[in-house]
Length: 234
Image 1 (tube, one colour):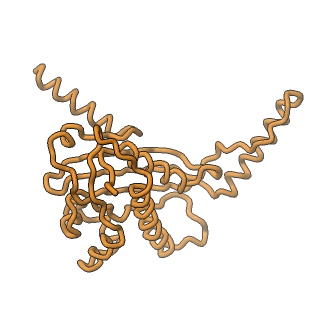
Image 2 (cartoon, one colour):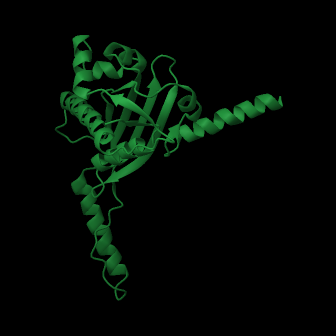
């Protein structure tokens, strides 16, 4: 019974790490597996847009935007691995990063477009493109209001605050607490042969007119590159 309780506690601790806003690295895997020099493929990011879309935002336009953002996010993380990752040989393992254009081209040759790739097993896609590990990224953007509406609320809040605090000085900066999006970002690096999770990062946050979704995605991408268990050898 005690052994079962201890095992459950360990599993719970790992899951809590994996689901937090911190980067979880599978230290046991990294210490035992021969990761150095293996090929990593960053897959097209799975993007889902929900919430209050603009009135002229048709379903076709929504899907087109999701697919376009998918490739942009994939390219953004690829660039960060190339230019921003700093090797730490005591904690990180060097890998070879596959060009994302090459990854996408190989998928298209197999009849797999961007949207179809989201529905398929990431490890299976990794085998198709000749990778040893795959990075799967999911982004969900729940739109609450437009930037213009959020900015207007910020101005109104600032003006009202100044009126209520008259005599205590005037605040000239616009309040930026009005949310435009709820954001969910998840990135998981796996070994395609044994399906082991190597690195995982999950983050929930809110975007505003002054901190747009693109900045949050860029920040999340930087974090997994900086704190993940691998780096790209140049």
